[in-house]
Length: 155
Image (tube, rainbow, N blue to C red; front, side, top):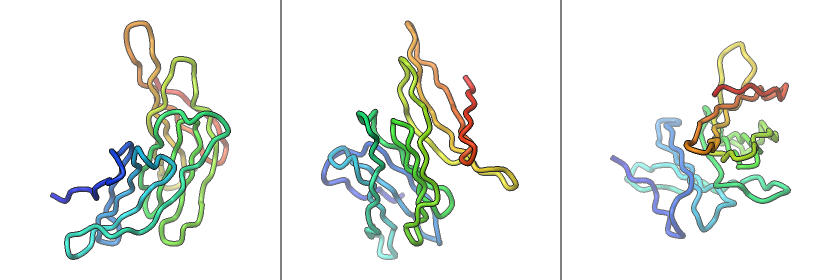
């Protein structure tokens, strides 16, 4: 097994890995640098090669929880606790999606996001949040069609 690159500046708050172009790639967010996503590729010699950094989108209000990172094909999807989602193409750094989705809810904590894609259908983003009640936490999955900004909830 291949270990992730060490986060020398602190513990990891978000991470994602994928195979791309025959190499393992990693996207990492550390506790000490929550505004940056560090990108790495696993090299032939068994070491991790730094590919660069991508800024986490900043919202207008307080940052709610750690950002989430995930890979979608050759792109990196970054989502914040405020519902801001940015998708960057890794080959050239171009932003292919930047949107703000309302995922906040009273007594709910945002957790993660990922891309949902099916051939012939408009791309969507799924947001996971936990809604607190008096006795338990309830996961909720909200999906947002990227172009239309409509929201559906599945509890």
